[in-house]
Image 1 (tube, helix red, strand yellow):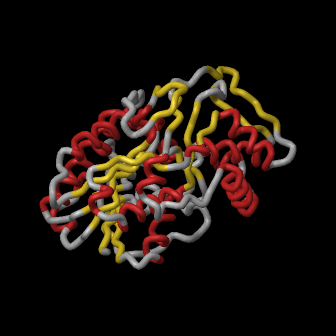
Image 2 (image 1 turned 30 degrees about the horizontal axis):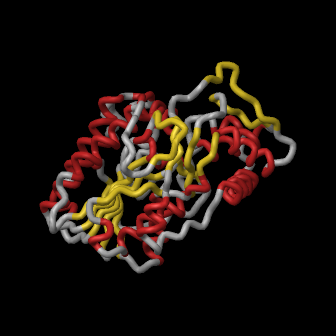
Image 3 (image 1 turned 90 degrees about the vertical axis):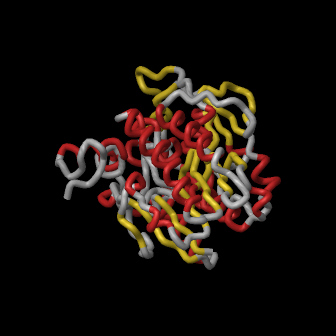
Length: 341
């Protein structure tokens, strides 16, 4: 299948591309590459690509593709809060425009990288794909709006699918440290402390980025009637954890670490425990390979290999919002987050 992957140079995309190629797909990437300076180690696969912001995509860019895997966007709550209007323009408006153009040129499948952040203040109970949304951040709101508008484009020739990824973790050539398990392991390795910024009680579903990639491929390979205009929570039910339980897993992985709560640690309203049984039941090809224990060990080994320091993972290179602010300070990008040079 000829596939366009937006955001192919990002945290998930750099892991997904080799997996798509190994499965025999012809892959082209599209990315503005804002995080070119955030490479962790090696391993970015070179493929044909368009260096372009998704807001600037033209019809001609999309011709000849059978599917689009849409990963690109402002990718978490802190970055989304930097400029909520831009978050909505990129994650919502530009995503809907991309889907409309794809439909116009005859792209049959459009797989949207959504988020369990849609559930937001979901509480203690289990949430499935029919549960109400309670997003509480611009990021979550933007994903909810995009899902709603793209869903209305579905017809006999255009099949959107919405993959609501659990909180991602795992090693990537474009590693992020603003994700809970990645962050807890980094603090533990670099400082001997497992630093928790909330009271530790919120629920989070987590999923490895390789397993997210497997979910996308399973949608590509599934019969149309199974995935047409459907949403799937991506993860496993057993991988819902309270933050404090993830801290305990990290403590068991890295010897001699103490768990410490931030002085201002309070209750985080973002709390959701997500039922992922639909994707397991509907898409038998989706067979997750990772769990939190295995993921923590992978991260620990990667941090050991590079000798990760506190200054590095809390600095501007790997922290998305700090990296963007540095590009703005140097005037390499403008206030709309487009390159100036």
